[in-house]
Length: 465
Image (cartoon, rainbow, N blue to C red; front, side, top):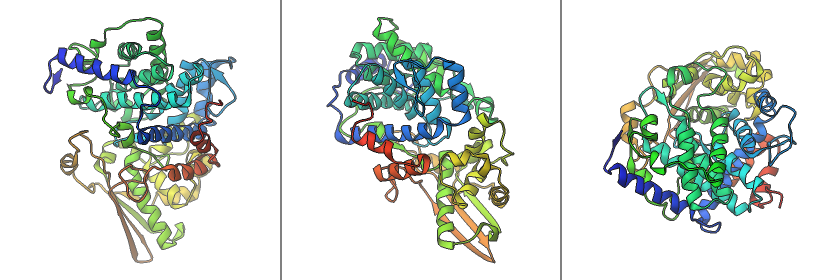
């Protein structure tokens, strides 16, 4: 494993020091801005779960994992069921991620849901205070963000196992684990995490599993935390040793992300984007731009002649985004295929279909009107910016590009409307539409028909105590 500067022993000491610091934080130690960010992330995940729980895929997973058993420590969101915390965390994570509307960290990772679900399940099981739940969410997100940013994955490979460590940290903290237990929980999760997956199989062709096994990752995190609190041991140095965890997950580790506590408001949870649309994140600037044109032009769909999209090259890299969507497959597969198709998302947006479960409803995805708009969408072969330009924009602290790009040109009646975007609604760095509580209330109304879940998080009545 290639490392930046430190020896493996120094790196192990830095990593352990970080975990012990995070594990030693009290319920009141989060800065107010970080606690608010954790509450907003939790609310966003709950919105996504409530919207995703009724869909066929969620129902089938509940049937497979619970059978007739409906009693346990934690709620299965969107239902009246309860389940053991590891199962509840997995089922809730699946619902949160089902519509692909969960948060996206620096345009490159989805781990907010599994962190929030693991923390919530253990908080309910242990009768934790709401402040302890928020601390678990913030700590779990910090661990997941750091392992994800630290690992430079191999070309053509995905490493979802990196996210399991955050779920373990979230569960351990929410359950009241000690700093020593947190260190062991993370080490155990590293030993239990899945191996990397090749992109052509996991992402290039969508099958009946998404590109990361979110339900399993969340369940693994809760199980690892419980094992640690029961006295199971794993060498914490395994995460940073060579050979060790990062050797299996990545080709290089950026050691600066594995050392030093977060300072002040500088927790990574403040840098995740929330989604207004159930669709892959890098396509959102195009949706925003097309919706602007639809509002300003007042055009009816029947009068549109062509919709041309110059898009971010990261979208073109993933082939299923540009494929023509076929008729709705078996219902439990529908959300995955629908949310990963940009022409379909653009058509639904132009038709002003409320974002949420309706974007995975065959009545809309397969309607002749939707298909007619889709046929007018053309994704241009040449992207709006080059990969070289994107590389030059990478922020040194994270090695990630915060912005994503699109230009949309709509032609009708011999006239062309143009709109361009260099970030997306719900980006924390957006000055026009940041992911604040107003944003979340609008999303809850669109996805769930009510903003009641926002009130339960804001008034801290979510845990029912």
